Image 1 (cartoon, rainbow, N blue to C red):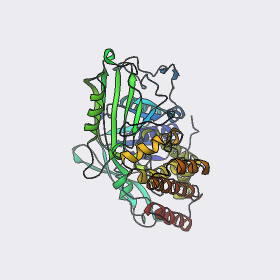
Image 2: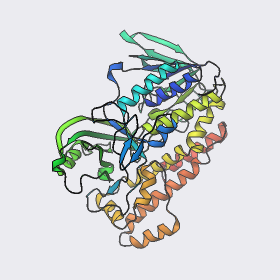
Image 3: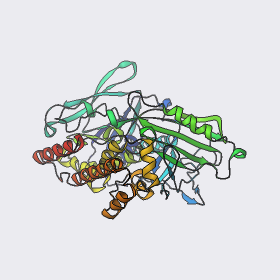
Image 4: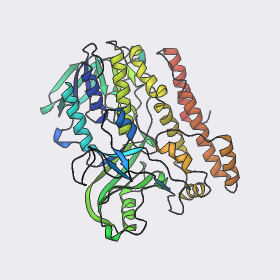
Length: 473
């Protein structure tokens, strides 16, 4: 348990996984923490399991299971599909990567560094632990704005709390030493700041995807000899689709596509996948969908008296849309920063959170580079992706890091090999080369993120970052 520190008053907007984990950590450190959540408690989290990084859950203090012969065993593993528990039984490893048109797959499968985690159970556990640590959670309380000085250069911003709409539309101004935006991809509080583009950028365009998934019962008598492999159809319709077993009786089928006018309906594609396998029944256990974030963090996650975590901070893997694990990691970094600041709530003290996210953990740099990579490769056709996989240019070795949230830049030898293999279609190689080159530039630039807060140093860094994401240069 962390050492006790000054009893700061912390206001957190949003009771998702990142907000709840941060509340738990800061309450354990002796701070007065209140979480404001717009939903009624009965609404709960979405009723399906998310892929979350195994290592992140372990570092957050969960009792992690051990995989034995493809099955997870441990006290938090579900005994049955509808049973209580945090983790699904099936261990996904390896994961097959197929071309969108199913004409081929990568020559090597990838290591899947995630574990399927029940979101309802995860939120319930984090909620209970936060309350046990001393945090207060107020449901049906919606954050609608910030208090304090919210306009001006980043170093002139000073957040002093938030405005909340409670039951019966009653408004209240809540004073706080630190206010946290954990409201999800809408970033209700962060986007209300005005700091010369340093922190307030809303998410949109290529940063948004539309996903749909369903968990179905399996009729094992109708399974073929190969069963139904865990796989991704990488690049399908500008996104990806999957089948993930939960256990021997249930399967998760879903996918996500770029959210743009005229996009394909992922539910229709998923229904087509289901039709391919007679063993997947019409009995739906859980499911749903909607808009999800697949973007990148704003240039700063902090201002004096303010920080953002989770989707509100762009803490999501852009190549997969997986955000819970990254959000939990961000919450742990934010908690450590606030605790170590020893009562200092200024931008100079909270800046360490930026450094931890963007540089020291490598997460922010990796995800930004993957975002740049995705923005270019997302426009490849199904035929072009199949060609790259067939020639082993888009290989399992290359995709393993990206699916697990790490940017991978092929070495010179690999690029020369790709050139020889793909010489018949140079335009595709040009797109791949541009994507890799841009990703490398972005990653290198994030490694130079300002070590300490400096208005001039940050402004120079930000301008270069804006140029990199705007296009060649």
